[in-house]
Amino acid sequence: MNKKWEMFSLEQLGKITSSKRIFKSEYVDTGIPFYRTKEIKELANGLKVSTELYISKDRFNEINRKFGTPAIGDLLITAIGTIGEIYVVDNTNFYFKDGNVLWLRDFRDIDPDFLKYSLMAFVDELNTISHGSAYQALPIEKLKKHRLLKPPLAEQKRIVAILDEAFEGIDRAIAIAEKNLANVRELFESYLNSIFTQKGDGWVEKKLDEECEIIMGQSPDGSSYNSEGLGVPLINGPVEFGGIEPFSKTVATKFTTEPTKMCKEGDLILCVRGSTTGRMNIAGQEACIGRGVSAIRSKNNQDWVNHFISFSRHKIYESGSGSTFPNVSSSELKKIIVPFPPKEQQDYIVSQIKYLSTETQRLEAIYRKKIAALKELKQSILQKAFTGELTADTVEKAA
Image (cartoon, rainbow, N blue to C red; front, side, top):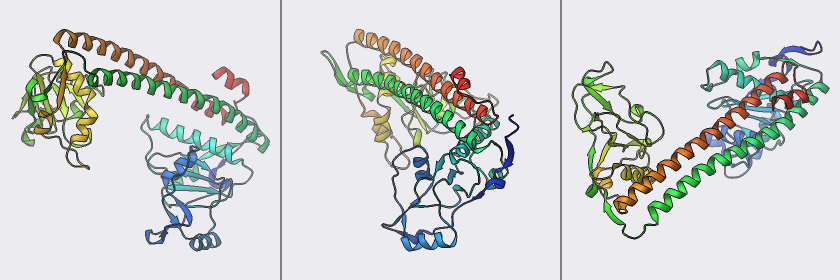
């Protein structure tokens, strides 16, 4: 560490506080923008702010006169939910919600962008300590006690310039990878759409219950549940799904000694209740099915039905009655219209879908790995920046 770098707690360098409470009764139709966590996150990420709430100018002036309001160069950091979204204030014509956002003000001899990057490194450290599960709250006292190395102001500005340039390049690379990731999935979905909506010669349409047996789940008595393997496996929903991919196999993690409705190995298991409606897996074994799912068993070509239902999952979700708690009934499932080409064509199309699905997943894995590596690179550069190891050469070698 450079001898000119000194260690301080944040509360030694400035004030860490929040806003004064604004009550709902104080909202007005127009006036001074009043930001919540959502708007602070938008500002932190350079997005256009979707202002929805306002307070009167008189109330704003009163608060400013008595307690102060955010000034240019102050920092606001989200502290509840997804923590660590940091906005360096560049506009003073607003106020913000107390509690969910912490306010760093009146900091001495410290560049606001240097402080922002330091706090980004701190948040990364918190998430590393929590083994990948993001912190849900950042207590104000924890932030006050956080210690950082403070170099001279000229050195701070040099570090900020290096980080700005490095992060601009990394963020650009992440955006390209994310776009490529989205494009891969969109191309696959577009192919499925062309298959299932642009029907050819010899195709016929049937209701789902003409082609399949549909078994609606029925939950056994809760007292029969166990995890010791007594009775038969129980599938209640995604908890028993073997993965997020629709064609993953269900797993036996819960059992019942009083089975009700049963599925067979290889049946399509479809979620029909709640926010997971439309999600599916394939039954990994014979099992009892609870009321949150249904089993769909084709009489002729299970693969074709599986792929069509997977393609239709969003429509199935939308067909659920009840906007806050979707619920797809047996009658709704029965009337789903399924297109069927001749059997030989079904087999060929399914083989093509499987091949393209495998390729899509392979490319998605590559892009996700690249995005993760770029984000790790940002963390690595941040850590070096606040231990005195950062130079332009360091960034080039890391990249």
